[in-house]
Image 1 (tube, rainbow over the protein chains, first blue to last red):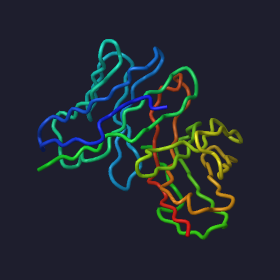
Image 2 (cartoon, helix red, strand yellow):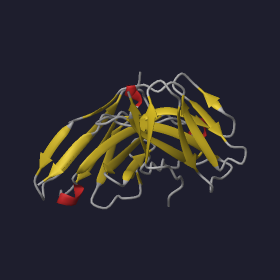
Image 3 (cartoon, chains in turn red, orange):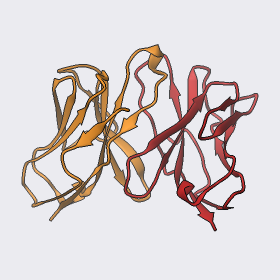
Image 4 (cartoon, rainbow over the protein chains, first blue to last red):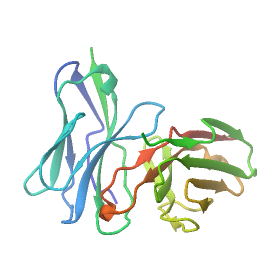
Length: 111
Length: 115
């Protein structure tokens, strides 16, 4: 079951904001939204997660719509090192549920 | 910093061989996971463990088994390797508690080729 839908690929100019969308229209009340990224030949790296409020950390911002059916990961000033595959995942908090990674969005930052 | 290490970055085995992939973490995390990653399919969960000697099947456990004799070590076993098990294998760990609202930390991966 695909719990999230993401565009397969996106480009972004270096120095500009990268906005990566994710649709999770079937999200339930106890499911959090997580974002990970995977740079070529490395394991996935955690970026950020949230439940319903917008979140920000040193890497990115996460904007979750009020109905929680979609979210956007924002990399405020993309660099070439942000070129990676970005995964949007939903996961319930009340049981030991797994992460469903899907195929993600391949972001290419262009010089 | 959490450190998750995997025994090999690259491994080549022959069909029918028994293969051990080892994962070791140094952060005293309770939860450990094995995924495989294939082009176009994303990451798929094979097995996971929430405690020593405990294991749970993920989405694709067939052809695999696991062992968790110590908290820091989680082994993935291919009893009789087949060519369709050629893949990138990723281990991950996670701290328990906080109602499972935690991030997972991944190892660098093992690229296994079965000839």
